Image 1: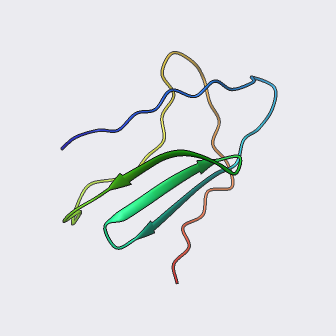
Image 2 (image 1 turned 60 degrees about the vertical axis):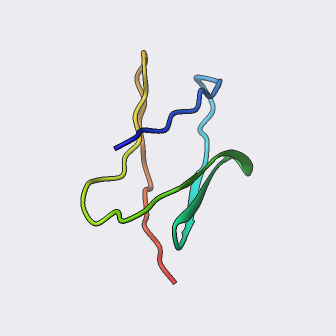
Length: 68
């Protein structure tokens, strides 16, 4: 399975808001209301979604999964 990564410069003292919207096999991720990455996903029947930080420490909070 291919992994997608997109570098993002952030301030260490300011929280950011992440929104991911998936419709059918298309998705887009917004960071602070700016488009960060779009993607397609096919046949995702197993596995996990996740967030990670490379070379640093991060705290994720107030995570919610919403559906229509």
